[in-house]
Image 1 (tube, helix red, strand yellow):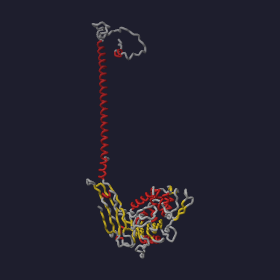
Image 2 (tube, one colour):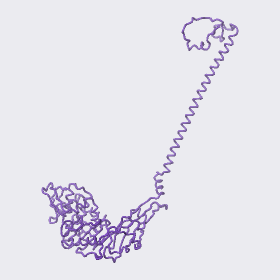
Image 3 (tube, rainbow, N blue to C red):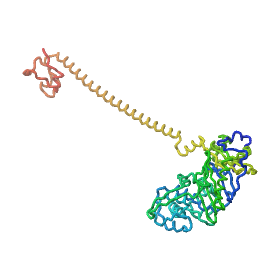
Amino acid sequence: MKQVVSFLLAAMAAVSLLPAAVFAAEEEGSSTPPDTVSDAYVVMEADTGQVLIEKNMNKREYPASITKIMTGALALEHDQLDDVVTMTDEAVFSVPRDTTHIALTPGEEVTVEQLMYGCMMMSANDCANGLAEFTGGTIDNFVQMMNDKAQELGAVNTHFVNASGLPDNNHYTTAYDMALITRYALGVEGFRTFFGATEYTMAPTNLQPEERLFGTQSMMIVTSAYEYEGATGSKLGWTEEAHHTMVTTAERDGVELICVVLNSVGQYEKYKDSHNLLDYCFDNFQNMAYKEGSIAPQDLSLTGENGTVTANFHVYLDGNFHLMMHNTVDQSTVTMELDIPTAQELEAGAVPTVTFALPDTVTSMNPQLGTYPLTVERTVPVQETVETAVQEGITVWSVLRFVGIFLLVCLGLLAVLVLAMLVIRWYNRTVRRRGRRRSGGKAASSRRGAASGRKRSRGPDILASHRPIGDPRSTQTVHLKEPLFTFPKVQDQPVHRRDSYHRKNPPRKD
């Protein structure tokens, strides 16, 4: 379901529209568009695509060579200017010799730049075929590319059969569609160079030793009786079926207009019609800019299955938006209709629009001011971010929990390691303590034994024993007043440290 709001802007006329560039507004100025010989025409503002004035703009007509506007724009989008194209039999001989060409021959090597000049200035059909075949692989493939692009641009009443504009019952367009196509072409890099060129010299090629001289066929952009002040580019077309056709762009005071005339009978009437139409618009229209916020923004929310808001949409009109208005039009009569898709449709890519219109009684300009896209800002609520992160396992909490567990494990391992080291240290100290105790006990026993021996030595000189002296089994100690043996005294002879007896029992002096 779409939300449609329609209301008058009378209350907001004073604040919603501000003059940006006012052209000369003369009271005696015309309030109705000029009559034309051309069966259909459109004057479109290039920036916004607004149709200022029109006549039979949706009537199907034969375009003739203004078809090459689409051909040249598509070629520039896909090719480089210095790409070399080798002309084929198909590209050359599929063009009737009694139609416009620059006498290219099969096998001739030319650049995309040279073909563009020949296509746009001389309206050469062999150049158009060369571009089509090189860009699309085949001419048929390129024609399909042309039709696809037309549908993409909204030129729904256009169908191409060839790249040159030669007559065919299924090769048709409308004035409005050609204005859309020209507006697209003006945005293609490099297109304006060829669209506004007035003369060019094509260098010799591998099969053509002479230079080829090109000059524009449009009198709107060169010094002539029909030169138009401010004209920036022009393309002509003619066949017996289409009669005369022409597309012209002109700019004054920062406003660029696209003028399309179709099915114009007579060689010069297309110039007269284009002059009058452009003058009428430049002289009687003013550029009106909308203030930001003059249209109330729309806010929509998208809810999920569990009822929670998963997305918010803020829809508003860009503050840089502007319209062209005729000086005689009461601006308070402008109506506006908002076409706001549902939140589900916005999520799927639908585009909200606003349509401006005047009462049908207005004759000084096209009352349908146009339908324009609105700006959409999509924001995601915090809870959706959290839920999405939970589903993906990358929430802040999960990260912190993982880090916490990791730190706890590390601390646990560290604690076990420290405890093990303490246990080992305690065990080692205990073992050493016990060893010292044993060593100390043995030393004390030896000292006590020595002390008791000295005490016993104060008894009889010789103690009797049931075992003879010298018996190796005897455990008694015999103390003599005089040593049994004497040893010669050796000077400076150190006592051997391994002699435990002498260490423990040094010789006594009487």
